[in-house]
Length: 272
Image (cartoon, rainbow, N blue to C red):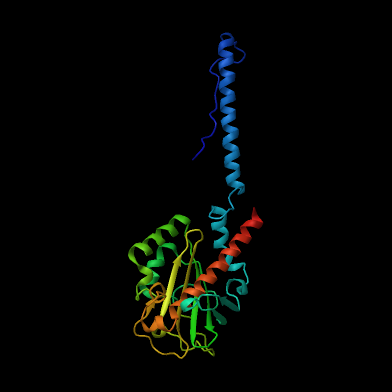
């Protein structure tokens, strides 16, 4: 809803010339009051937009903007905790825990995604990419989890999410995120050929894409990767599913996303 500027009324009679009767005088006074009232209402509403009043609740424009600024103002240990608990996150509701073994420097997106995925994400742009790699408690699995901060507004993020859902882009093996294989760690051999399972979530209440990709810590190649949505289904006989790698990707992405949302809530509460 938009509010027009109050109309200005000019007298077309010479200055000091009397009006024709009290009726006309009362009509003009009433009209002036209506215009003044509309102007005050419009000014009050417009003022609330400019000052951010009532704009910092969950899903608001204030919260959306705050979320997009977190990449440069929040400690890495908050976005990617040194240890992450995954109660009930494993196959059959078993517990999981992960230890962070490497944090990538904040970068652009050129080398982080397969070409077709990079193309699919192009409409929302790449402002900054934050990534960390974790290993599980058994040191058998490694998982890279990432937060892609985009340049998009809420409408563009909503459009991208709809496209991902409609076209199943988050299930295609030619649109997988790439791992961060940190040298000198158990993830050193975690390359493109070692990707086993992955998940990608386009958020609409923040200009952020959350993703995770998992693999074996011993560097073995995976010939039949599976999206986490498939690899976590009960009764799946795929090797990736049997190894629990779908749960690794999904569990870490879930918890990093939850932590991110808590930070957004905290920031917007302070602003309100």
